[in-house]
Length: 63
Image (tube, rainbow, N blue to C red; front, top):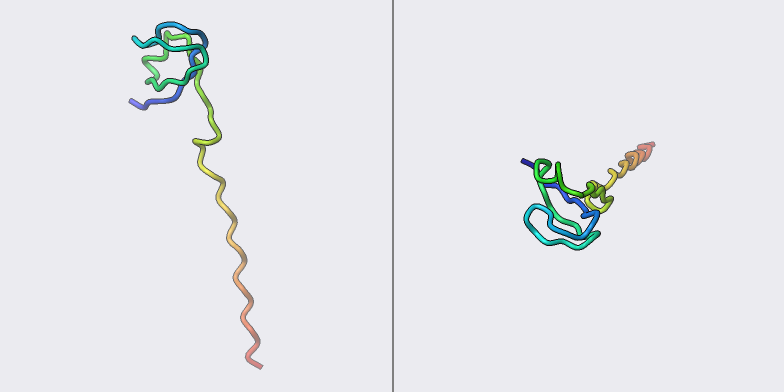
């Protein structure tokens, strides 16, 4: 099962742990299903965009 990062919507007990409102916690989808949490979509964890390669340099004329 994959573990994802969720943010607690309110302070209280989530998956057997006491958390504050807004605290980020790691849960599986099954654990988060009935808990008051929202999935965190972070750009920091996303893969960076690939850079385009530069065009090859032109070869000099042998003449």
